[in-house]
Image (tube, rainbow, N blue to C red):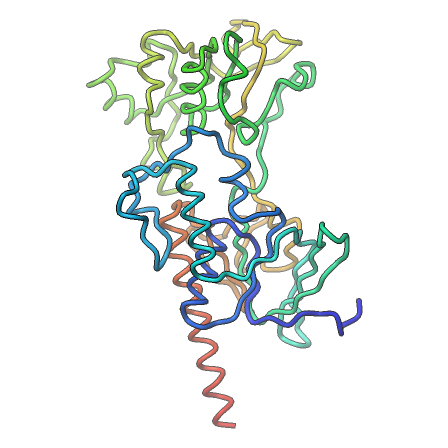
Length: 365
């Protein structure tokens, strides 16, 4: 590719979700030039296009605000999806973030000859490839780039009525239908409750951790009696080691206790609309929603960076944000928006320190 068409930038940020926006804002706050490359046609596409209507932030707003901009004082304690999108839009415009949408990164590699990162991105609007050369590269594409649906024997026979939770908006179209939700994290439990509230005959494949079970016994009774099974590790262990958060009840537990939401163990196989579970139980369903999480796509385009990322595209050390040769990441600490804010500040401060050191060294020469 003609080097005359390469665009020189100080910092290139990949991804315009909260992680990328927060990093760009922190850099702009310090007067450091940067651009944000985003594969979708808008910022915050996960929140805007792939989140269900009922979604709210699961932590109080003071733990979810991005650097240098609090939520409006009249915002509710737990900010709903639409208001959070509005907050992100105001954040982007307020910090004058330079966003290049419809740029799908094909590769990013460190050029040792010039000591900079070379990023090749497909402009999906024009169909042409663009090259950006950056002193610093920030991977902010996040943990949740692509939805994951587990391999299930016979799933193909179920047809198009099986979907990932990223495709689910609300339960309006499922009124009166038999719907199975797979996964009992926050998304799974909220979607199950949403389906029930719209009049769907709702079931869920679920477990509940030991510690939460002991606490919930005080309020709800023993949920083991309603089919909720215990995993091997408790919520605080999982949060510390894997970053996974415990489930926050939004009303599903009450419906489970009343048996208005049925609970099943893991799926063994599917044959058409008939689902067989590992305990031998069978039931017919008209739709399945897989609330089974996401995976990132870093390793599809990042070449090198093995000091920061493992083979699965997650950081080698939990809460790591810095690699070698000017490589950084934000949004991989598995600490939600609070972790994103900390990463963004750390990354911007470190880049600022390096640039100041470089300027001092240049003056001495």
